[in-house]
Length: 89
Image 1 (cartoon, rainbow, N blue to C red):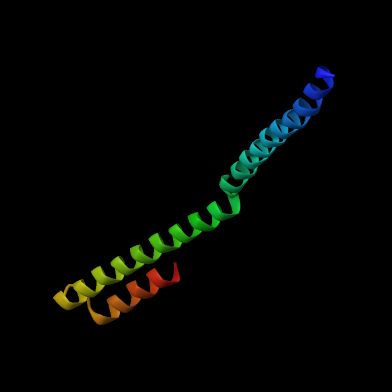
Image 2: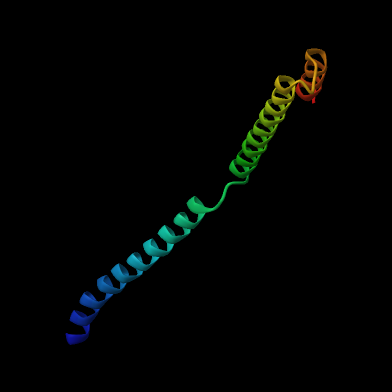
């Protein structure tokens, strides 16, 4: 009789403990997958950073050309040619 009462109490408790452990493990795996870096996002981010670097570099080059034009080192024609060359690349 005592063994039967023990089994009736112990089995549901063990099942509950295994359920909690399994759900914790599955939650951990899901979190790991959700937090893993996505290669597509990295590629898009790298592309965006490269575009921003190119745009800022282009902007600074045109600003330098404009300063040279204002200081009289370049003529308007030379400035236009250099600017067109930068924009075409």
